[in-house]
Length: 503
Image (cartoon, rainbow, N blue to C red; front, side, top):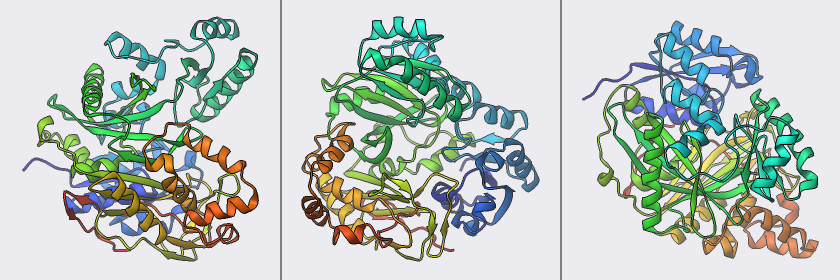
């Protein structure tokens, strides 16, 4: 048996903190939670053996406060920090501080994180390594004169993208030259406010694209493996909302080729730990490197469901210096898995956040192939200060059709009173003929919304009822099924592992 940490601090909140806490407990590791003023009664605080207050509700005063988190780590005697995702998970300065203070960061070292975090630097590195990249600029645009010149070479439509981040922030689609300068200024402004960096570059816009990502694991002994791909093309405003694996768009030869390229990407930057290589695939099935996420992804459970591999435990083992216990040939995905990200948002009011008290909660009943990753409970007050993701609902089936029907069944059992959620939105997606047939791309939700805009009120009501909602009026009330954050319990090659639910 290899070496392992005795205590780790989890520098995050919500469902991902709960997810990590449960993995730690199964490995005999003491998990330490941190919390802001807004999270004093959060589930991750209740579940931890130790929990420390780190500041006021705004993230800059708590979950993004590097000094405070490192102080707590030293005070509680934790040997390592797991960053989860978001907040400091891809902050190279935070990783450097951990390295300087002798604290193990559960993730890659600062050098590859910094390189992959700056998108134009990553593009240059991948191009030099022979990895296919999307045509566009290799450096940030310096001024409006260069903007016009480079845009003319790339051609319209094109994308303006923030060099320092992702998640749709600082991103603008420009279809015509007349909109170029105004879109450039908007992209710069949003990039500055989101990432404290106004740098923007240009990429060619791909028509009918698919967003495909490949999960990799790389240990400290130089072994890197890929664990299959995830189809992440169901997006709203460039934000993923539903993911699945395997992709209904790829064939076996292509997924193997993309997996091998993902391993090359990791090798090109000396990457260690869990990471995700993201690709854009055009309608002709030609793929291009998009970026590498140097962290655990929100959608990691679907990979766990089909492989039986616990990615959080692998992260901990790698960070502790232990080698991967399997080779590429040992990884044999089985079945199909879907994930719905359940947000506290009102789908009938522009997806506006819906914070408030969860007055009553009926979680999915579970059953074979159903996993519910949550971070809330009945009576919990959903804060306004953070991302409105409440939970993730994941299903597995022997076939894609079975996984979809299982998801619809689980969603129908999932109800929350007191706040609105986007569960009805997922019911419509899953029942749509194009989704059910697996014939969709990143424009699917945009096209779905246009379809609904063309309906008259009576037709819209019929459509909503068909999606499993009793009626349009009820769906607008606060009786909408409410999302929750990931709790644990996943299907591993025919078995369900039950996780602790002590609250």
